[in-house]
Image 1 (cartoon, rainbow, N blue to C red):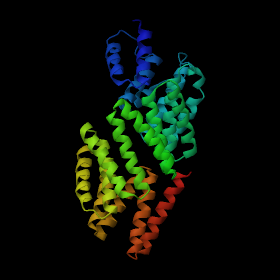
Image 2: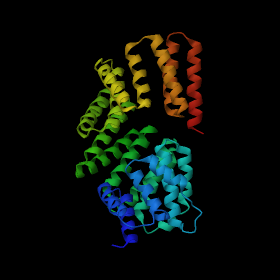
Image 3: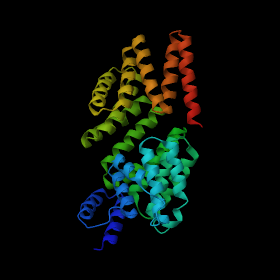
Image 4: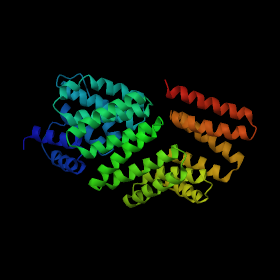
Length: 350
């Protein structure tokens, strides 16, 4: 097979998220005598690294990539800005991610005959808009991606879009609409017996019922998700599900949640996940109820989330701790944390 045809086949496997095929082709291509500085090769290699979640290597390529060379056409410019948007999404720099997706959008005309690339673009764009809390834009982009995937019979990716629309609608309190999208996504996952997607959807159904203050149903769905996650051995997912499950146990005064918190804290330390170390430490102090520990641990946790510009958690924990300090008649500290929550809300809605 000619090198250009092989490179195009690799590119298609990557964009269609066929991981095993993409890995096999990566090995084949590495044994070819090729120009490893060609723009097409470098862009495809960066997209491959993103597929296998090696964000650092993808970012290194994109940081040194010269977009002003004469060999860059409109399609490669689309891919370049799209990939920049994706790397910034993974790095949780959502506003910059959106700016690069907007830049990539200018070059969509150059891939007008490649609907799956277009759908992937709109899906990733929707995800960044959601994280930046630009909800109407997120819904618009997700619906465009869903329509394209369904029109092209890509039902596994349609399931991802339905799941994302469920998450977005949950965020704005459209619970009936959110559940409809989750159930649609679950039907696709059941049809393909995709345990990864099923775990994700059951987790999200738990989150939906938690938002509705129905802790019993939330716990039921989180436990189904956790069973699947344990079977799949996805440790990063386990952290989040353990954390949210523990919160719901706390809400109903069930001490069983404390053991889950300790399990999650131990796992977060083993994985070196600093974010969830703070989540679990704050939750553990709420189980134990020592006011001095609570104040110290919440101050450390909120400072961490401010440093990472994770404003959603600054707002959540600011309100939570402000309310707690108010209940203890410490109005000065309560006012301080309510103000931090207000500032975080301003950042979210900028």
